[in-house]
Image 1 (cartoon, rainbow, N blue to C red):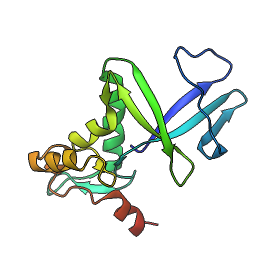
Image 2: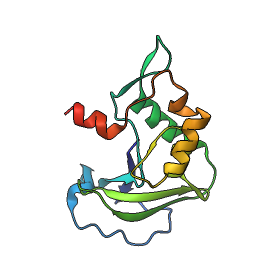
Image 3: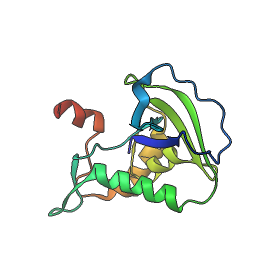
Length: 157
């Protein structure tokens, strides 16, 4: 899952210790109602299959690898113990914040690639991706793994 949403309820108090988040553009904001804003973020260094991007788990079973990746991320974040730390590392060409996400000290982007549930974006986690392919974990155990998301997006505009 490429977007990680953090909900700020402006009327309530936050139970986190945070620095100010400076945003140059409203492109990463989604206004829910008069006192609630979602801040859209993308995990830096990875790319995951898009929603509706199909792959073949077995010869006869076609699944939505985008949904599978989203569910995996959600369950990982819910089950993994420890403090959640989100560090802004930049913005993408859509104006979304690029973030590094740590949960209990574990780099979530790197973990998704190691578990075969994400592709390395450029060469950020290419060693981890190659190891996941060799070990046949996650998508790499499938009869037909998903194509790289950027190729899928290009052919499905």
